[in-house]
Length: 308
Length: 291
Image (cartoon, rainbow over all chains, first blue to last red):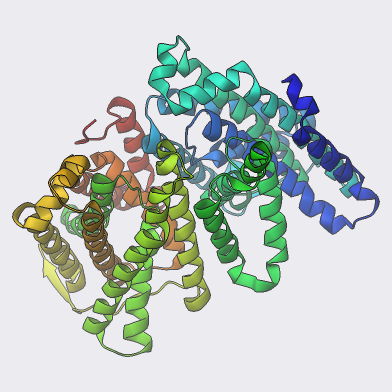
């Protein structure tokens, strides 16, 4: 851990955060808005990487955790008029509970079976939202009366600060003894268990942490957008974007996942002139990265540094 | 009356699901690959058949053949451009290959879906049926096309059974699904077996796709739901078990039809999902899965 503070990665990240923090002084509100969303997405991707890269579980349903957090916060605010901050905290809590409910049966199964259980959870949530349209706004979405602030700069700083703190906690956790046990149990559960570690407990903890950050980020995103809809926080396509971000940036790096998310969202915006082909191009680039640089951006950079 | 209606409609849907899921489970059984571009390949077949029959006017039979041919090509492309490079890659650790194949085929499926949407728009397309008209069975007016779908599905599955259990190639495929290393020790090239399996898969997915296009119609939006339904049927039946998938396809097909007729079409997929979660909880390997 101590070596991290003297490593190049630390200084590069610090410099990036400082540069990012000064952006509101000289770029337009449009760019800030784009990056705000990208930062919240970065937290989704980092939380996902903790489960996948370290605990070795393919969670096809990151949007289940995100969606529960986002919709809980949104519904409490829109239907009951509770204050924004209380809603955000309760959203994160609801997501943790949802994570527990999902993890207890899901951790009994492994590999593709786990992936399918999480995918089914998303489909169920989606059905649920559509069926209980009175409460959730259904397919049209839920309009949320309150926002944290309407100042683009302030929103940007909140998102940046939130992502930085989340990154610090998640990265610290991944490098801690707990993270190493997680990594071991992801790669060889039998051997890790034979060494006396309680695998289920560690994976459950990873699930809870992942759920907490996903839910918190989802709730914050809802109050930034001013709306919660299936298309923005629950749809399987959103989950695919989260997964692609983490794999692009480099699995098992946590910080790479955030880079991947920012790249994905900014690239999607640059490709807007190509119209309907934008998703095709992004998917093709992601596929090429998966095939030729399986370590992702940060994985490739780190392994080059390690070699030299 | 309504009971017969459910019985007949449910059978056609279930047979179609069974055909779609069989190829999917065959590939998993033999090479351990979960192909998440499955839905995209089915839709590609249906859209190709539609384009050939309705735009180029080649006729329904030739259109259906072209659809199956496109699915076959796409399946081979999936294997050679996405799956094989990942399996052969030295930079991906062996224990992570499964996850990379999942991610790779998922992205590949999205690429196919987007290309279809770009060239043929998102509109739903119905392939011209090979047989037209309506007959009355047990007092239920049934489109002949529905009967045709059910018959073709059952025939193809029977043919597949014969191929796997009665021919030399089929037995090699079966052996590879039981013990890949044993097969290579007997002097059979594993890659050749994989190519045969992907070929069979392409044809099955193509037929399923074209029939689906005739029966219900498809659009590029069907890609995700189709993959998800094949995935859940296969897991419900037990990954790699063809007979398990057949049973699961009928369970899911009838459950969906029952819900759609008796409760509401809006809740159509919910009971099947609940059943899936329940089965995973008490029997994680699926109905007929081996562990």
